[in-house]
Image (cartoon, rainbow, N blue to C red):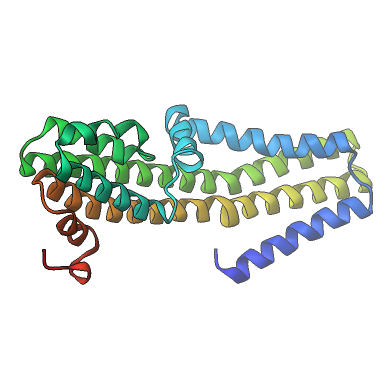
Length: 249
């Protein structure tokens, strides 16, 4: 949804909500029932369309397993620290730092350094780990795309049910139909807002995060291979940051 569309649906939502509050159409209990109906419909549709396992995995990936913009730099600093420790002694000292690593890729990388003594096999194992992380990010993004699509439908369904119930309870009077129309417009607008301004941007952010993380981890892989080859820490820095950091050693 572009910016103009987002502004339009937000204005619709604010208009329906303001009219409902100004006319005192709904009681607090009815407000809770309307919002609960939308949330319940969205949850049921999501569980049916993507499954509970994929939904839980996507939420965990989005809310818990975060990759901050500066974490790539921290990973590179850790690899340089390991290179210095390995240069002074053996990999035994490096292995002791595994528990202190702040991200999962760093911890897994240290475990792979213990298991592989060939740069080729280490590269293959690290590439598999990187692909697994990228696939998880893309899978989570697809789940939130599905949730975004379900949000609009859930808004229409919940609004239709609210319109029917309010009209039936009010025996089709003008006031009952007006309350049902406000409930319908409110829930439809809220579903579109959730779809276009919450879930779809979150899916796009997850995709971008997965690409950025894969890029950072691919650079980290070069440093880890140089670390396995007992390269000088400055050579490891060149592998991580590129030729602009090259220093003759």
